Image (cartoon, rainbow, N blue to C red; front, side):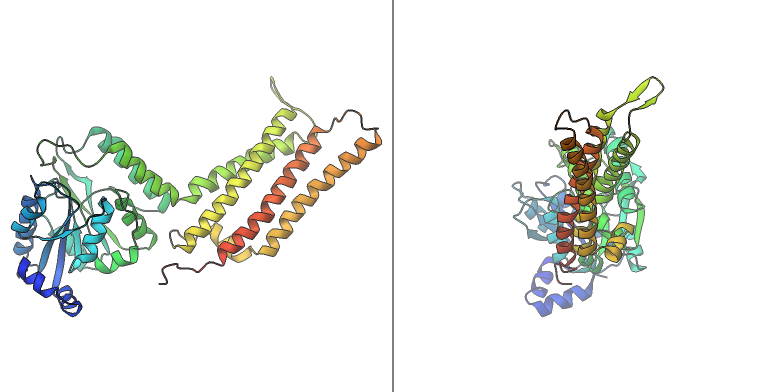
Length: 408
């Protein structure tokens, strides 16, 4: 085994052909994003280099400098790392650049603040050798040393976000935001990650789960940040929201479909129950006021439902979601003509009811109009019918988009 030194790597990477040879000759690249980590980056590089040497692994340590002003890049070079400068700021941007530049078949990523033990690389390498696509470090299954993670993050933030990720996407990951993880270059290419910031961590897990990749978790130890006189890059509330926002944007079932069905159910029950007169339950009497509220709920629910269908179709187009029952129904049964016919049926039914009310009102000499219930029902049907007609056109347009905008 040997760790290829900086000069050797530079000479090997002078041409595309040479770079390909280097890629084939290296097994592991350890990638560390770095932003003003002068206190710890050298130690992290030395630990990783020593670990690769002890394991007799052909590899490299790559530090992606993301705009440091404290000499971190030079310290990393002296410790034996290959340094790449990425001027675009962002955790995701730096890691994506580093993984793409990595010359190893497997890539291990970690932070450069000495919070992860980079001497323990074998638990990440072995599963990849055995066919795993993605190896996640788990602080929850391992050890979190005193002072290494704030109580709010440890007990609420991280468990909640990991649980939501598993709920939304069907994953089984105990610590979805652990910063130490490993991935094969092939699996990373299939993930097609895009996020530039901290949500990059969530995106990797989500894309791996949705692609059906083999994910393995290994327990690790989280230590207190080794930097002196400065706080962590992580901002709990800001970055927690960014993770949550990313997951919600890829979860149309929970963001749109479930709320829509609840609103439609409540609304239609009110419309049906109060269509012929008030209803009393115990001391409470429900009259046409609640029927109007039911109409509002039904219309709002249908609008949200249509938006959810658009979101699901868009996710399928970008291959960001599973082909679930709703999508299978759309692909099997939906057509523009069926959508137009159904929308027209609803609209015309409401129009007939409204016309009947109008004729009755004219026959009575255009006096007081006491037909709130049928008018409410008719208006609801006409609005939903019109929504369905125009939404069918838009949904049909989306279904004609190419299946993969990247051309793969």
